[in-house]
Length: 309
Length: 140
Image 1 (cartoon, chains in turn purple, blue):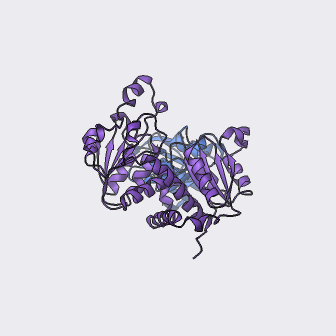
Image 2 (cartoon, helix red, strand yellow):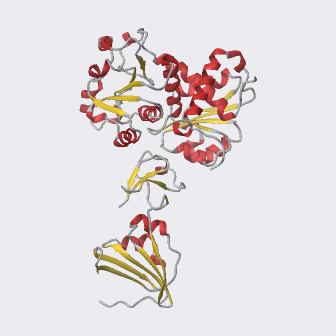
Image 3 (spheres, chains in turn brown, purple):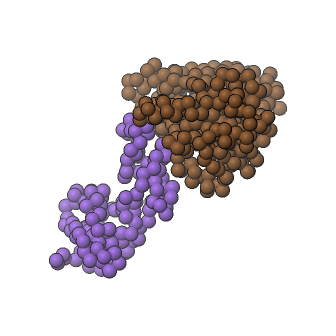
């Protein structure tokens, strides 16, 4: 593997490095003018072998906002992957044209294969159901901005906790902070995998599983909602039975804390009622904005660019 | 049953009964020209029954594969009729192209050139995870 710095999994960065990214992301908002041209003549390649709205656009917006340019493709069909080119060959080619790569691929571990041959930094923008570290960075920045801290809180995770990659990554990231308690709210069929529970135990984290959102609501500082995905079920009957189990509406929020932070990686289907959008505790669109700021900070870090003193 | 001793070669002892054919296959012993003896269900004071493989030739052995299949195996190197070296095995930290990832969502399922790599994550429970997708593959 080359000695280029990549981001494949959130644990590739230390807690200190994540703090540093959060500081830069906040400085980008505070001193926007200083960053407007900071990536001039730098090119970001967005290689999206499967579709995405938020992630790809936020990467592109991040680079454009810093004076850089973007190139790439938004589906495998419009790349040489459609002709059977390997990930490794695609990456080696794109390295000739770009200074940094953001890559999404439906197959798990694809960015690791790319990282073995790359000469420019690679950012994993999601590999199947495996890792999605820039979503986790987004979540951490959102929590830090809303709560002013990343420790000492109760985090409720609700919905599909079995297949939700954002949930697993967020748990893994939050475990590195002091006194985090997890409340895992899901139907039995969609509980977090055993290895995630083992990881929480290894870190000595306090956690519990509940099936009712109402039951957990009053103790939460963060409520992280996820979508229950039809494609994860073997039969339609189970999906129909479970899909509406965890719809967040204003009635369910009655017992919630005044300063609860409601998050969702988006897209949502119906798991958060639209009536919640105007509640000041709803932060999911703010979260999408945080996604752009943290990706700006990430691009700068991996390119080794710092704001002029 | 009487099997001649090895003069110069390798004796794989304490193989778990029934596993000798797996080892024969993994070590590609069918490619060897010299004599190879597989002894199944030999009596063992330690395990009750065991398998033994005698190879009448000194060959390069992949100890990682052997350690993965059964870390209790003892490798005896025999030279001129005498035991020259006794090697004890342990589970390897990394396995390359020994086992394949069965996760259909793993990149290794579609790109044939990738080296199938597994990392040991729990020595006690003999758990290996794919280095690409983290899918678990338990040691047999």
